[in-house]
Amino acid sequence: MTRTKNLSAVFLAVGLAAGLSACAPAGSNSEEEGEASSCNVGISMPTRSLERWINDGEGLKEKLEAKDCTVDLQYADNKTDQQISQIQNQVAGGAKILVVAAIDGETLGPTLEDAKGQDVQIIAYDRLINGTEAVDYYATFDNYKVGQLQGEFIEEQLGLAEGEGPFNLEPFAGSPDDNNASFFFSGAWDVLLPYVESGQLVVPSGKSPASNDEWTSIGILGWESADAQAEMDNRLQSFYTGGEKVDVVLSPNDSLALGIEASLDAAGYQPGSDWPLITGQDGDVANVKAMLEDRQSMTVWKDTRELGTQVETMIDALVAGEDVEVNDTETYNNGVLVVPTYILDPVVVTKDTVESQLVDSGFLEAGEVGL
Image 1 (cartoon, one colour):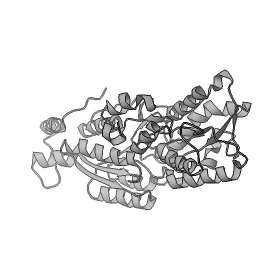
Image 2 (spheres, one colour):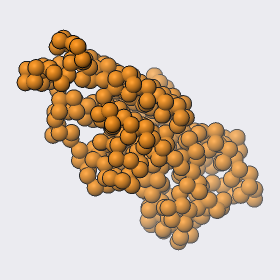
Image 3 (tube, helix red, strand yellow):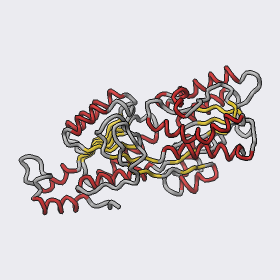
Image 4 (cartoon, one colour):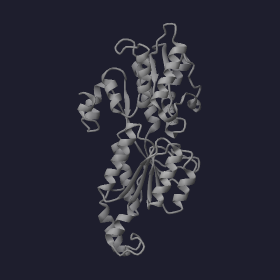
């Protein structure tokens, strides 16, 4: 196990062994300057439009700055060109470690390869970066399990394993340019597809991928709530005109769930009456409120504070020249290499466990969600 250490103590030990020659900038004889320059981190987050990325970025920045690291945190407004430019500027500004939550996991290769050529070490944050050797480590949650938990929740709530049905299902998938979205969908669809094939789950819209590989056909680009709302509007107006009702919606995350819920509300669905079962992911404040109002059935919570702490530990080890702890070296193949990964476990939160899981843990404050 790699231990989290006080960086100042680590750098001092390195300095005593090597005269600080490896840490100090050119022309500097200052031990303190050498220490500061060794922990220079660029954090690249995809957007401020989702609550979780704000929490992730600011949380990690705060952890690192408490250890006197130099930190440049940037948000790219879901624009790949902007993220590329920001990463280039971070490297030009002296970043020696990059933490990157990619907008598009397929396009950052050349930029990161240039960074590697300047001895920058790269940690993929919660989204795998594909098609390049320029990824040293990956830190994430078990994304297949996220979907699996959503699928199992639907299975249990509807009594599918006991033969109940048929129920009308409308499935959604995440952004086609997000590598994680394929894992989310596969985890859920491996549970639900057999029930679709048996007729216990019916998809009136026809938006039912025949296999996991076809998930992008129902993907919502950029995870946009408004686009999910428009898609749900279209399905309701086109396929539910004869009195049929939606019984369950597979939503891979909370952002899409908000849009779906807005569409159902506009169509006249009523919580406690004909409101369908709806899944989610992230534990966003608006969605937790929706759960307490019976407008969302569950969310899969990934405690991103734990993810931030794990990445902090990875950075500690990189700065100290120690081995970086991982717990998976087989799963995440980016098309060029299997990226050494640390995986954390997600958990299901329902209306009944909001207080015990989200509030008591300090992830949310009771007042934020009306408790």
